[in-house]
Length: 195
Image 1 (cartoon, rainbow, N blue to C red):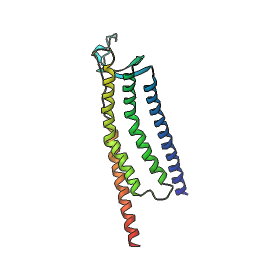
Image 2 (cartoon, one colour):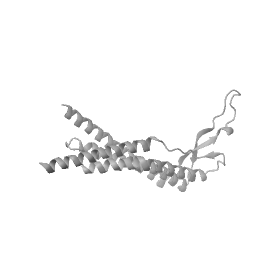
Image 3 (cartoon, rainbow, N blue to C red):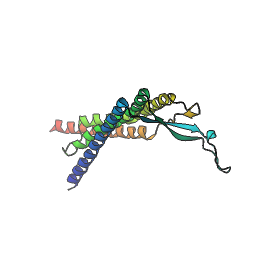
Image 4 (cartoon, rainbow, N blue to C red):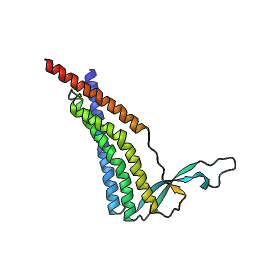
C-alpha cells in the first residue's frame, strides 16, 4: 500500500514537472516571438536611491533605495531582444532543472530510482542550483543594465543585484542526495556481484 502511494506521488510530481517544462518552454517561445515580431512594450527593473524620493511626511525616513519599473513603450528591436535575452536567461536553467526532475520522478514507479542515470540527473540539478542560479543573477543584471542604458532615465537609477543564498544551499543539498544515490548504486552493484 505504501509503495503504491509512493508511486502515485511520484507520478503526480512527474506530471507537475512536465507541466512546468511545457509552461517554461511556452513562456520562452512567447518571449522570443514577442521580441522578434514586435512586442511594443517592455519593462526594465531598476532602483532609485532613497534621497531622490520626495514628498514624504517629515516623520518618515526615506528608504536607502526604492525598486521601480521603467515601462518602455514602442520598444526598439534592440530593446525587445535585450528583454527577451533577460527572460531566456532565467527560463533556460529552470526548464532544465524541471526536465531533470521529471526524469527522476518518472523513474520511481519503475521500482529502481537508484541508477547511474539518476545520479547524473541529481548532479546536474545540483550544478545548476549551485553555479547556474548565481550565473543567472549576473547575466540578468547585465541584460537589465544594457536595457536601462537604452532609456533616457538619467543617472539616478541602478540595476538591483542580488544572489539568493537559497540556490547554492539547495545545490549543496542536491549534491549530497546525489552522493547518497551513488552509494546506493554501488551497494546494489556489490550485492548483485556477490549473488
